Length: 374
Ligand SMILES: *Cc1c(COP(=O)(O)O)cnc(C)c1O
Image (tube, rainbow, N blue to C red; front, side):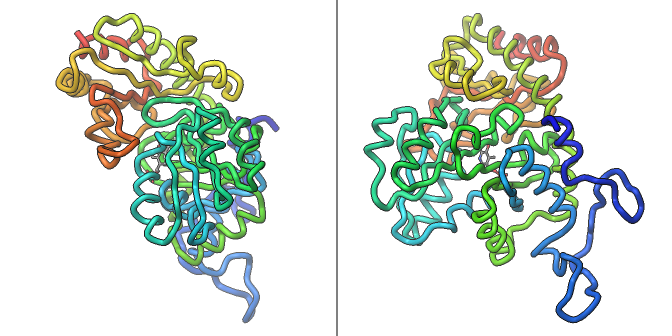
């Protein structure tokens, strides 16, 4: 079965009892057991819930991994991966990783003895130099947030494996429709399903897609630590996933048009969109992505005040954090999503704006940007 068929069918057979064609929301905390010590496969809803199982099976199929394990948020998924480590273990992390991931390792896991080095993962010699005998993970995000840098997943997997480490790819920006990191050697794929997978800005969630042995450890953590998504959240995410393919095609087409248009605008500098031939990561992106997604960032001539003014002037692009929904959003990373990395190696330029291009009519979106920049 092809991707878009799997998105609608895997894990989602009609309900055997009633024939319901959508997976029911199993809004229950516990499951009656036929005999002492025997159960139907479900006993308590932290450990397992059929709506969550459907989502997990579908996501594993889309990423091409053996299993997927879902969590209450993307950062809960990130946390579960770090909990596979032990004190003294070392992580080589992209130096422009999602701000919340950086905050979590630097301010939470570092207290428990996990060491981290922030490295430009685009510089393979720097990656090689950062690897130690204690390195367990290379943590990559491509395209990155908010600068849309592109990393070469195959090259990073080779380095990781040569050092007995594993490559983690945060695939939130690309989604499995545009990029399947497993095909390039990644071992663990992390998602904030809050973004494109859910796709409608109405639910927070996370997932880790990986091999069966690692998934078993993650499922243990899911139950032992307890950061599970509720059944309604799993259902909303699964409903979003059904239309992932058509949405990503439209996000990508709209963003490509807008990126081209921005490069011509005299108030705009440094448009970062991996689909632009001028983007330094364009060739690698073309190799590992099927299209270039819906995220764009750019700098506004005139500095921080001009950037803030533009962000506040759009009408269709709502001024908001987050990304990946059907509606277009604009934000100022330095003050909004990336405030927690100010003063660190991850700091972003203060005249930078980030767009999450939605699936509205692109001419309306261009008119909105034209007005705001004008
Ligand atoms: C949003 C995001 C996260 C965190 O996910 P939440 O669902 O907000 O907890 C992690 N990585 C990336 C790339 C993100 O965009």
